[in-house]
Length: 299
Image (cartoon, rainbow, N blue to C red):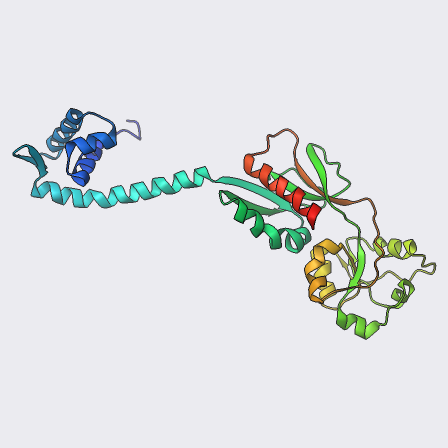
């Protein structure tokens, strides 16, 4: 037997539905309008259900059809089930009507820029649900995300990319660090202070060379895998760090970080908005992409 086939103990569902509509409305005609069938079809389904339960559920009084005591008891029993059914169905329909999109990104970009501003997008796009994933910043393996924010030169096989934000870095530190090791009036003064490194120790050497420091300091110090870890280390006074100003704007605005010098180092790597070249971008993802591009231009 097919596993979805009704057994002899299962009630005829069309008949039960017709009975529930009749009992709720108190009228065969009203039940027929709701179910979009004829009144005679409703009456036939009521008779079919009574035959199945072998008990009269309705009785005619004058020209009206009313419930018997057994019919009222039966309606009370099934009405809760229909309420649950309607609620569950409505929930599924609501979820299916919402646009589900995913975006993968680097932790520092997510915590420093994306998440603090995400409420603006969600407030203007209430029918969109966003799932945020970590991007693998080492090799950006193909993933199922509709969009991804990546850092590099913009060339990833299988992806279309567009520039989103500059990757240029500036030196920053905390006020406590500056009080301890300052004053730092010129770039060469950084030669004698602890330095925090983000992914590569050569970045500090390149920045110092770019501002004309001939005698490079030892560029030792703790090395962290990504910018979010490096930011945490900087806030913990482990050293001065090279940070991308837009991603630490809150810390700079609050004074928990201070920019030491205005000179930026641009090594050609930037943040890009990416999406798969072989897949059509869903509507919700298109809206998020447009918001990202507009927001990064105006901030």
